[in-house]
Image (cartoon, rainbow, N blue to C red; front, side, top):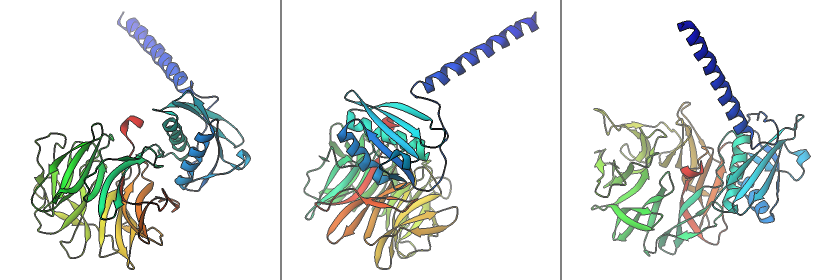
Length: 410
Protein backbone atom coordinates (compact mmCIF):
# COMPACT_ATOMS: atom_id res chain seq x y z
CA UNK A 1 0.00 0.00 0.00
CA UNK A 2 2.70 2.43 0.98
CA UNK A 3 4.78 1.78 -2.16
CA UNK A 4 1.72 2.04 -4.41
CA UNK A 5 0.77 5.37 -2.86
CA UNK A 6 4.35 6.60 -3.15
CA UNK A 7 4.48 5.70 -6.87
CA UNK A 8 1.20 7.48 -7.50
CA UNK A 9 2.53 10.57 -5.70
CA UNK A 10 5.81 10.40 -7.61
CA UNK A 11 4.10 10.07 -11.00
CA UNK A 12 1.73 12.91 -10.18
CA UNK A 13 4.70 15.09 -9.11
CA UNK A 14 6.47 14.37 -12.40
CA UNK A 15 3.30 15.26 -14.31
CA UNK A 16 3.01 18.59 -12.45
CA UNK A 17 6.68 19.44 -13.02
CA UNK A 18 6.40 18.63 -16.72
CA UNK A 19 3.23 20.71 -17.03
CA UNK A 20 4.76 23.78 -15.38
CA UNK A 21 8.01 23.33 -17.31
CA UNK A 22 6.00 23.34 -20.55
CA UNK A 23 3.89 26.30 -19.33
CA UNK A 24 6.87 28.49 -18.48
CA UNK A 25 8.71 27.56 -21.67
CA UNK A 26 5.68 28.66 -23.67
CA UNK A 27 5.39 31.82 -21.58
CA UNK A 28 9.00 32.75 -22.26
CA UNK A 29 8.62 32.01 -25.95
CA UNK A 30 5.34 33.86 -26.36
CA UNK A 31 7.05 37.13 -27.35
CA UNK A 32 9.38 35.50 -29.88
CA UNK A 33 8.89 35.21 -33.62
CA UNK A 34 11.04 32.07 -33.88
CA UNK A 35 13.64 30.07 -31.98
CA UNK A 36 16.19 31.81 -29.77
CA UNK A 37 19.87 31.78 -30.59
CA UNK A 38 23.16 32.02 -28.74
CA UNK A 39 24.91 35.36 -28.64
CA UNK A 40 28.73 35.16 -28.85
CA UNK A 41 30.78 36.73 -26.06
CA UNK A 42 33.61 39.02 -27.20
CA UNK A 43 35.06 42.48 -26.68
CA UNK A 44 35.02 43.41 -30.35
CA UNK A 45 32.76 46.10 -31.74
CA UNK A 46 29.52 44.48 -32.92
CA UNK A 47 27.86 45.73 -36.10
CA UNK A 48 24.13 46.34 -35.96
CA UNK A 49 21.49 47.59 -38.40
CA UNK A 50 18.68 49.66 -36.85
CA UNK A 51 15.20 50.19 -38.26
CA UNK A 52 12.18 51.83 -36.56
CA UNK A 53 8.60 52.36 -37.68
CA UNK A 54 8.56 55.91 -36.27
CA UNK A 55 11.05 58.47 -37.73
CA UNK A 56 11.60 60.27 -34.41
CA UNK A 57 12.18 56.97 -32.65
CA UNK A 58 14.66 56.01 -35.35
CA UNK A 59 16.72 59.17 -34.74
CA UNK A 60 16.65 58.65 -30.96
CA UNK A 61 17.74 55.02 -31.18
CA UNK A 62 20.62 55.75 -33.51
CA UNK A 63 21.76 58.53 -31.18
CA UNK A 64 21.60 56.09 -28.27
CA UNK A 65 23.47 53.22 -29.93
CA UNK A 66 26.26 55.57 -31.03
CA UNK A 67 26.99 56.32 -27.37
CA UNK A 68 27.68 52.70 -26.55
CA UNK A 69 31.17 52.19 -27.97
CA UNK A 70 30.75 48.44 -28.33
CA UNK A 71 28.14 48.73 -31.09
CA UNK A 72 28.54 50.14 -34.60
CA UNK A 73 25.53 51.08 -36.72
CA UNK A 74 25.82 50.04 -40.37
CA UNK A 75 23.29 51.00 -43.09
CA UNK A 76 22.76 47.54 -44.59
CA UNK A 77 21.53 44.50 -42.58
CA UNK A 78 23.74 42.29 -44.75
CA UNK A 79 26.82 44.00 -43.25
CA UNK A 80 25.58 43.64 -39.67
CA UNK A 81 25.84 40.83 -37.14
CA UNK A 82 22.36 41.69 -35.88
CA UNK A 83 19.42 43.46 -37.44
CA UNK A 84 17.23 45.35 -34.96
CA UNK A 85 13.68 46.44 -35.73
CA UNK A 86 11.59 48.63 -33.41
CA UNK A 87 7.83 48.81 -34.00
CA UNK A 88 5.64 51.23 -32.04
CA UNK A 89 2.73 49.78 -30.03
CA UNK A 90 0.27 52.54 -29.22
CA UNK A 91 1.54 55.61 -27.37
CA UNK A 92 3.80 53.90 -24.83
CA UNK A 93 4.97 50.59 -26.23
CA UNK A 94 7.65 49.28 -28.57
CA UNK A 95 8.33 45.77 -29.86
CA UNK A 96 12.01 45.11 -30.49
CA UNK A 97 12.93 42.31 -32.88
CA UNK A 98 16.49 40.99 -33.00
CA UNK A 99 17.53 38.93 -36.00
CA UNK A 100 20.87 37.22 -36.38
CA UNK A 101 22.38 37.61 -39.84
CA UNK A 102 24.42 34.44 -39.40
CA UNK A 103 23.63 31.24 -41.27
CA UNK A 104 20.68 30.26 -39.07
CA UNK A 105 18.95 33.63 -39.41
CA UNK A 106 16.96 33.00 -36.23
CA UNK A 107 15.26 35.85 -34.40
CA UNK A 108 13.43 36.82 -31.23
CA UNK A 109 11.27 39.76 -30.22
CA UNK A 110 10.07 41.43 -27.02
CA UNK A 111 7.28 43.92 -26.29
CA UNK A 112 8.40 46.75 -23.97
CA UNK A 113 6.26 49.40 -22.28
CA UNK A 114 7.23 52.77 -20.82
CA UNK A 115 5.61 55.92 -19.55
CA UNK A 116 5.60 57.20 -23.14
CA UNK A 117 6.87 56.15 -26.56
CA UNK A 118 10.29 57.75 -26.00
CA UNK A 119 10.99 55.87 -22.79
CA UNK A 120 9.63 52.63 -24.26
CA UNK A 121 12.05 52.97 -27.19
CA UNK A 122 15.02 53.49 -24.88
CA UNK A 123 13.98 50.55 -22.70
CA UNK A 124 13.62 48.43 -25.84
CA UNK A 125 17.12 49.48 -26.94
CA UNK A 126 18.41 48.48 -23.51
CA UNK A 127 16.76 45.09 -23.96
CA UNK A 128 18.58 44.66 -27.26
CA UNK A 129 21.90 45.66 -25.69
CA UNK A 130 21.35 43.13 -22.89
CA UNK A 131 20.77 40.32 -25.37
CA UNK A 132 23.65 41.21 -27.67
CA UNK A 133 26.40 42.19 -25.19
CA UNK A 134 25.27 40.24 -22.09
CA UNK A 135 25.41 43.47 -20.09
CA UNK A 136 22.51 45.79 -19.26
CA UNK A 137 21.75 48.76 -21.45
CA UNK A 138 21.96 52.23 -19.90
CA UNK A 139 20.06 54.42 -22.38
CA UNK A 140 16.91 54.79 -20.24
CA UNK A 141 18.84 56.00 -17.18
CA UNK A 142 18.59 59.43 -15.54
CA UNK A 143 21.21 62.10 -14.91
CA UNK A 144 21.75 64.56 -12.08
CA UNK A 145 24.38 67.26 -12.61
CA UNK A 146 25.45 70.77 -11.69
CA UNK A 147 24.99 73.65 -14.15
CA UNK A 148 27.45 76.56 -13.90
CA UNK A 149 25.91 80.03 -14.08
CA UNK A 150 28.81 82.36 -13.42
CA UNK A 151 29.77 81.77 -9.79
CA UNK A 152 26.43 80.11 -9.11
CA UNK A 153 25.99 76.32 -9.26
CA UNK A 154 22.47 74.85 -9.45
CA UNK A 155 21.22 71.26 -9.49
CA UNK A 156 19.46 69.84 -12.56
CA UNK A 157 18.22 66.47 -13.82
CA UNK A 158 17.43 65.05 -17.27
CA UNK A 159 17.58 61.85 -19.23
CA UNK A 160 20.81 60.81 -20.92
CA UNK A 161 19.94 62.90 -23.98
CA UNK A 162 19.00 66.06 -22.04
CA UNK A 163 15.28 65.69 -22.50
CA UNK A 164 13.07 66.24 -19.46
CA UNK A 165 15.53 68.96 -18.38
CA UNK A 166 14.52 70.04 -14.84
CA UNK A 167 16.01 72.64 -12.53
CA UNK A 168 15.80 71.43 -8.92
CA UNK A 169 17.41 74.27 -6.96
CA UNK A 170 17.25 78.06 -7.19
CA UNK A 171 19.46 78.94 -4.24
CA UNK A 172 21.82 81.21 -6.21
CA UNK A 173 24.65 79.58 -4.28
CA UNK A 174 27.07 76.67 -4.74
CA UNK A 175 25.72 73.13 -5.24
CA UNK A 176 28.13 70.16 -5.38
CA UNK A 177 28.19 66.35 -5.39
CA UNK A 178 24.67 65.16 -6.30
CA UNK A 179 24.00 61.47 -5.64
CA UNK A 180 20.88 59.51 -6.65
CA UNK A 181 19.16 57.00 -4.41
CA UNK A 182 19.09 53.55 -6.10
CA UNK A 183 15.34 53.86 -6.77
CA UNK A 184 15.71 57.31 -8.38
CA UNK A 185 13.27 58.90 -5.92
CA UNK A 186 15.75 61.04 -3.94
CA UNK A 187 18.97 62.97 -4.39
CA UNK A 188 21.66 63.81 -1.85
CA UNK A 189 23.73 66.91 -2.49
CA UNK A 190 25.75 69.57 -0.67
CA UNK A 191 25.08 73.30 -0.81
CA UNK A 192 25.99 76.51 1.00
CA UNK A 193 22.43 77.83 1.13
CA UNK A 194 22.85 78.84 4.77
CA UNK A 195 26.44 80.03 4.53
CA UNK A 196 28.45 76.89 5.30
CA UNK A 197 28.41 73.75 3.14
CA UNK A 198 25.65 71.40 4.36
CA UNK A 199 24.19 68.09 3.16
CA UNK A 200 20.61 68.02 1.87
CA UNK A 201 18.21 65.25 0.90
CA UNK A 202 15.68 66.11 -1.82
CA UNK A 203 12.51 64.13 -2.48
CA UNK A 204 11.95 64.01 -6.26
CA UNK A 205 8.19 63.81 -5.90
CA UNK A 206 7.82 67.01 -3.92
CA UNK A 207 11.16 68.64 -4.86
CA UNK A 208 11.48 69.58 -1.19
CA UNK A 209 14.98 69.39 0.31
CA UNK A 210 15.71 69.02 4.00
CA UNK A 211 19.12 69.34 5.68
CA UNK A 212 20.48 66.10 7.11
CA UNK A 213 23.98 67.29 8.07
CA UNK A 214 24.30 70.88 9.17
CA UNK A 215 27.29 71.04 11.46
CA UNK A 216 29.99 73.61 12.04
CA UNK A 217 32.60 73.29 9.32
CA UNK A 218 32.15 71.61 5.94
CA UNK A 219 29.65 68.81 5.31
CA UNK A 220 29.84 67.19 1.88
CA UNK A 221 30.32 64.07 -0.26
CA UNK A 222 27.11 62.30 0.81
CA UNK A 223 26.41 59.03 -1.05
CA UNK A 224 23.70 56.40 -0.67
CA UNK A 225 24.69 52.81 -0.01
CA UNK A 226 23.68 50.36 -2.80
CA UNK A 227 20.37 49.64 -1.05
CA UNK A 228 19.32 53.23 -0.34
CA UNK A 229 19.08 52.74 3.44
CA UNK A 230 22.30 54.38 4.63
CA UNK A 231 24.48 57.26 3.53
CA UNK A 232 28.19 57.95 3.97
CA UNK A 233 29.36 61.56 4.13
CA UNK A 234 32.26 63.73 5.22
CA UNK A 235 31.65 65.91 8.29
CA UNK A 236 34.48 68.06 9.63
CA UNK A 237 36.90 66.21 7.31
CA UNK A 238 36.00 62.78 8.74
CA UNK A 239 33.91 59.88 7.48
CA UNK A 240 30.46 59.53 9.02
CA UNK A 241 27.58 57.18 8.26
CA UNK A 242 23.89 57.84 8.72
CA UNK A 243 22.45 54.38 9.37
CA UNK A 244 18.84 55.37 8.60
CA UNK A 245 19.01 58.13 6.02
CA UNK A 246 15.24 58.31 5.48
CA UNK A 247 14.45 58.72 9.19
CA UNK A 248 14.08 62.45 9.85
CA UNK A 249 15.74 62.29 13.30
CA UNK A 250 18.59 59.95 12.38
CA UNK A 251 22.05 61.49 12.85
CA UNK A 252 25.39 60.57 11.25
CA UNK A 253 27.82 58.52 13.36
CA UNK A 254 31.57 59.15 13.13
CA UNK A 255 33.64 56.29 11.68
CA UNK A 256 37.15 57.77 11.43
CA UNK A 257 39.15 59.98 13.80
CA UNK A 258 42.40 60.42 11.86
CA UNK A 259 42.67 64.22 11.93
CA UNK A 260 43.27 64.12 8.19
CA UNK A 261 41.32 65.59 5.29
CA UNK A 262 39.00 62.99 3.83
CA UNK A 263 36.81 63.32 0.73
CA UNK A 264 34.65 61.40 -1.76
CA UNK A 265 33.50 58.18 -0.06
CA UNK A 266 32.23 55.38 -2.30
CA UNK A 267 30.49 52.14 -1.26
CA UNK A 268 31.41 48.65 -2.43
CA UNK A 269 28.66 46.90 -4.44
CA UNK A 270 27.69 44.82 -1.39
CA UNK A 271 27.61 47.84 0.94
CA UNK A 272 30.19 46.36 3.33
CA UNK A 273 33.20 48.53 2.51
CA UNK A 274 34.03 52.14 1.71
CA UNK A 275 36.91 53.68 -0.17
CA UNK A 276 37.74 57.38 0.12
CA UNK A 277 40.52 59.85 -0.58
CA UNK A 278 42.67 61.03 2.34
CA UNK A 279 45.84 63.04 2.88
CA UNK A 280 46.79 61.07 6.01
CA UNK A 281 50.09 60.04 4.36
CA UNK A 282 50.64 63.31 2.52
CA UNK A 283 49.05 64.09 -0.80
CA UNK A 284 45.67 62.61 -1.71
CA UNK A 285 45.66 58.82 -1.78
CA UNK A 286 42.92 56.20 -1.82
CA UNK A 287 42.14 54.14 1.26
CA UNK A 288 39.73 51.39 2.17
CA UNK A 289 38.02 51.99 5.51
CA UNK A 290 37.17 49.12 7.87
CA UNK A 291 33.54 49.56 8.89
CA UNK A 292 33.14 47.02 11.71
CA UNK A 293 34.99 45.12 14.43
CA UNK A 294 37.79 46.21 16.70
CA UNK A 295 39.63 47.85 13.77
CA UNK A 296 36.64 50.00 12.82
CA UNK A 297 37.83 53.26 11.25
CA UNK A 298 41.30 51.93 10.32
CA UNK A 299 42.71 52.64 6.85
CA UNK A 300 44.19 50.32 4.24
CA UNK A 301 45.93 52.15 1.40
CA UNK A 302 45.02 51.17 -2.17
CA UNK A 303 48.30 50.76 -4.13
CA UNK A 304 47.30 52.66 -7.27
CA UNK A 305 50.95 53.53 -8.03
CA UNK A 306 50.02 56.09 -10.67
CA UNK A 307 49.86 59.50 -9.00
CA UNK A 308 50.40 61.34 -5.71
CA UNK A 309 46.99 62.95 -6.11
CA UNK A 310 44.14 60.43 -6.36
CA UNK A 311 40.61 61.61 -5.65
CA UNK A 312 36.93 60.97 -6.50
CA UNK A 313 36.88 57.16 -6.32
CA UNK A 314 33.78 55.38 -7.62
CA UNK A 315 33.32 51.64 -7.15
CA UNK A 316 32.10 49.61 -10.12
CA UNK A 317 28.50 48.53 -9.40
CA UNK A 318 28.83 45.11 -11.06
CA UNK A 319 32.49 44.14 -10.48
CA UNK A 320 33.98 44.63 -6.97
CA UNK A 321 37.47 44.28 -8.46
CA UNK A 322 37.17 47.50 -10.46
CA UNK A 323 37.46 51.08 -9.22
CA UNK A 324 37.55 54.35 -11.16
CA UNK A 325 39.01 57.60 -9.82
CA UNK A 326 40.52 60.94 -10.82
CA UNK A 327 44.30 61.34 -10.75
CA UNK A 328 46.72 64.15 -11.51
CA UNK A 329 49.02 62.87 -14.26
CA UNK A 330 51.41 65.02 -16.27
CA UNK A 331 49.81 68.23 -15.08
CA UNK A 332 46.29 67.15 -16.09
CA UNK A 333 43.47 65.43 -14.27
CA UNK A 334 42.62 62.08 -15.85
CA UNK A 335 40.21 59.22 -15.24
CA UNK A 336 41.94 56.03 -14.09
CA UNK A 337 40.67 52.44 -13.85
CA UNK A 338 42.13 50.34 -11.02
CA UNK A 339 41.90 46.53 -10.94
CA UNK A 340 42.12 45.11 -7.39
CA UNK A 341 42.80 41.56 -8.60
CA UNK A 342 45.81 42.63 -10.69
CA UNK A 343 46.81 45.72 -8.65
CA UNK A 344 47.17 47.69 -11.87
CA UNK A 345 46.06 51.18 -12.87
CA UNK A 346 45.11 52.27 -16.38
CA UNK A 347 44.58 55.92 -17.34
CA UNK A 348 41.96 56.55 -20.02
CA UNK A 349 43.28 58.39 -23.08
CA UNK A 350 42.23 62.01 -23.19
CA UNK A 351 43.31 65.46 -24.37
CA UNK A 352 41.24 67.31 -21.75
CA UNK A 353 41.11 67.65 -17.98
CA UNK A 354 38.66 64.97 -16.89
CA UNK A 355 37.07 64.62 -13.44
CA UNK A 356 34.05 63.45 -11.49
CA UNK A 357 33.67 59.90 -12.88
CA UNK A 358 30.55 57.86 -12.16
CA UNK A 359 29.59 54.42 -13.47
CA UNK A 360 26.48 53.59 -15.39
CA UNK A 361 24.45 50.55 -14.34
CA UNK A 362 26.23 48.19 -16.75
CA UNK A 363 29.62 48.58 -15.02
CA UNK A 364 31.13 49.21 -18.46
CA UNK A 365 30.60 52.91 -19.13
CA UNK A 366 31.70 55.97 -17.18
CA UNK A 367 30.22 59.45 -17.20
CA UNK A 368 32.54 62.35 -16.37
CA UNK A 369 33.09 66.06 -16.83
CA UNK A 370 35.77 67.21 -19.30
CA UNK A 371 37.20 70.72 -19.09
CA UNK A 372 37.96 72.20 -22.51
CA UNK A 373 38.78 75.88 -22.55
CA UNK A 374 36.40 77.43 -20.04
CA UNK A 375 33.57 74.91 -20.46
CA UNK A 376 32.84 71.70 -18.61
CA UNK A 377 31.23 69.13 -20.92
CA UNK A 378 29.70 65.83 -19.84
CA UNK A 379 31.05 62.79 -21.65
CA UNK A 380 30.52 59.04 -21.67
CA UNK A 381 33.37 56.58 -22.24
CA UNK A 382 33.22 52.86 -22.97
CA UNK A 383 35.96 51.42 -20.74
CA UNK A 384 36.20 48.30 -22.94
CA UNK A 385 36.79 49.98 -26.32
CA UNK A 386 37.92 53.37 -24.90
CA UNK A 387 35.50 55.18 -27.20
CA UNK A 388 34.25 58.45 -25.71
CA UNK A 389 31.45 60.77 -26.78
CA UNK A 390 30.07 64.12 -25.54
CA UNK A 391 26.52 64.15 -24.18
CA UNK A 392 25.82 67.80 -25.08
CA UNK A 393 27.25 70.84 -26.83
CA UNK A 394 29.32 73.64 -25.30
CA UNK A 395 26.33 75.98 -24.86
CA UNK A 396 26.39 75.37 -21.09
CA UNK A 397 29.00 74.26 -18.57
CA UNK A 398 28.03 71.12 -16.63
CA UNK A 399 29.89 69.12 -13.98
CA UNK A 400 29.46 66.52 -11.18
CA UNK A 401 27.38 63.99 -13.14
CA UNK A 402 25.57 61.20 -11.32
CA UNK A 403 23.61 58.41 -12.97
CA UNK A 404 20.78 56.12 -11.90
CA UNK A 405 18.89 53.35 -13.63
CA UNK A 406 15.83 53.16 -11.35
CA UNK A 407 14.91 49.75 -9.98
CA UNK A 408 11.45 49.80 -11.53
CA UNK A 409 13.13 49.84 -14.97
CA UNK A 410 15.03 46.62 -14.32
